[in-house]
Image 1 (cartoon, rainbow, N blue to C red):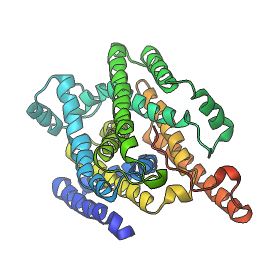
Image 2: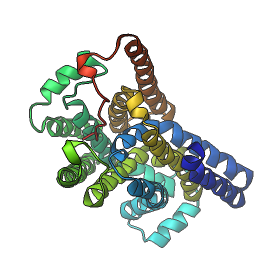
Image 3: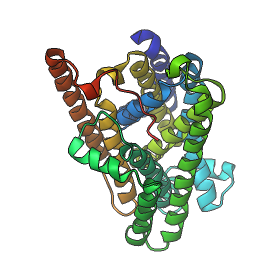
Amino acid sequence: MVLKTFGGSLAITAAGLLLAFWYGGTLGLAVVAVLAVLEISLSFDNAVVNAGVLGRMNRKWQRLFLTAGILVAVVGMRLLFPVVVVCLTAKLSPAEAYHLAMAGGDIHTPGTYAFVLHEAHPAIAAFGGVFLLMLFLNYIFEERELTWLSWLERPLARIGRLKQISVVVAAGALLLTADFLAPAGKPVSVLVSGALGLITYLLVNGLSELFEPAEADGRGGRPVAVAGKAAFALFLYLEVMDASFSFDGVVGAFAITSDPVVIAIGLGIGAAYIRALTVFLVRNGTLNEYAYLEHGAQWAIGALAVLLLCTIRYEVPEIVTGLVGIGFIGTALLSSVVRNRRLSRTGPPAADLGTPRLTSAH
C-alpha cells in the first residue's frame, strides 16, 4: 500500500535529484533537497484538507490527481507561474523573463527576476490569503455534530447561520489588509487581487456544489465516490486550493535561491509527496480514524491565511508558518488519540454514533 501510493513520488525524487546534480552540481542537489523538505513541512495541512475532498472522488479521479494534477502543480505553479507574474509585472515577454531569470540576482537587487517577483508578492499574498481564508471560514461557520475546540467552534457555527457571513468576514479582512498592511502604491493591487481570490473561491466552490447533488448520493442516500462533472469540479477545486497553498512557498523560495529551475525541481518533489500523502490518507481512512485531524488542519489553514496576509507588509519566516501548521495538526492528532482511547473504554456517545463524515471544507 505504502510503496504503491508513494512509488511515483520516489521516482520523481530520484529523477529530480539526478537532474539537480546534472544542472547545478552538489550545490544544486543540496538546495533542491532543502526546498523539497521545506515544501513538505509547510504543506502537511494541505494534504489533510485535500484528503477530505479527494475522498469523495472515485479511484479514476484520484489517479488523475496524482498524474495530470501533479503536472499542473509542478509545471504550472512551480515553474510557469513565477514567469507569468514577472511577465505581467515587468511587462516582459516570456523569452525576456526567462533570460532575466537565468541572469540570477536576489530580492534586494532592483531589476532582477527575484526582485520583480518579490515586488509582486503583496498581490499574490492577497489572492492566496483571501482564498484560504474563505476555505477556513466556510468550514468553521458550518454546524457539525463533532467539534474539536467546542467552546469556540459551536458559537461560530451559530453565527454561521447568517447567510454569506464568510463572504462578509473575508471582504472585511481584505479591506483592513489593503488599508493597514498594503505598502505605498499597492492598496489597489491588493484589493483587486484579494477580490479575485474571493471570486475564484466562490466560483470553484459553487461549481462543486452545483454538480454534486445529482451525483453524490447512492441508494438510500449513502454517499458514493463521485465521477463526471462533479469529480471534475472537485478536481478544479483541489488544483486552485493547491495553488493558493503554494503561493507563499514559491515566492519564499527565492530567499534560498533565485534559480527558477532549481526552485521548480525542489518544490515539485515536495508537491509530489504531499499529493501521494493525500491519497494515502484517503485510502487508509485516516480522517475517520483520527476524527479531529481535519479540524486541526482547518485551523492551520486559518492561521496560514492570516500569516499570508500579514506578509504583505511584514516578513514572516517559513519556519513560523511550518511550526504553526504542525502545532495545530499535532495537537488535533493527540486529541484524536485521547478520544479514541476514551471511546474504546466507554463507547461512543449518542452524538458520536457512526463514522464522522468528511466535509469538503466549503
